[in-house]
Length: 292
Image (cartoon, rainbow, N blue to C red; front, top):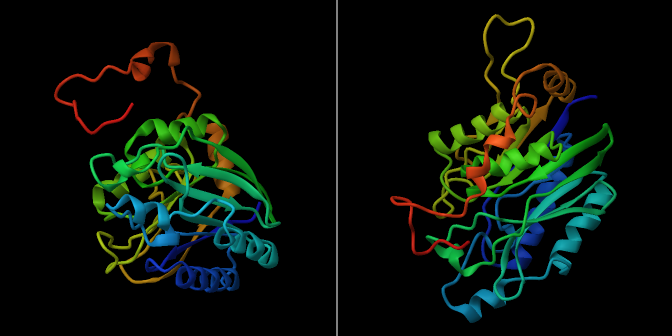
């Protein structure tokens, strides 16, 4: 299979829905012209990751997943013959959700994911957490890919990517809205390595509140037969500037690696992992803001 080209739309946005719509549509057209098979937005593009404290303002800013803003990207995906991952503050009861919608190249909605690990120590305490992790088969012009999704803080929980790997994910997309410094990028590198999956994150550029760019992608392939040691799994890392950055995943290499290497699911011992689903929280990890 030829490379899967994923465009990371490291762009700034505001709170105005129409502005974000037009800028987003233009960016997707640019991504297509660059040879993209899919375009991915930063976290909550519809409102520029704005979460008002005032509850009336928060609900007014949220839009339903079938809003014309979202539907426009589905129509464009079909027009361009290119998948699009659009993000939004989704209207939900009782509180909005932080959501990613993926349209395939035919304009079909194939995946809707709401952020599971909301940042309840901050503004996301006013959002509804998602109810699970999901994968979908993404039909591309080059062949099908099993796609999974997580969002920003989900990266900090190994279980997020692990569950997606167990569901067959080959590529995981991760919209983001926070500083992608060395430790957060190392988390993504680790998730890709331990699960033998490609992972791509798309952030807002430097200048957007609490963001610094550095959108990045990792293919998870640490060892190849013609190299004596391990290789760098990072296939792209942007700087802080606004722009469209391409991550090209060598799917043949990834799939061959997953067939022969030792990570992922081959040697796990899940019968010994019961503590992972124990809901008890012991000191020093007790936090009054945490939701279960």
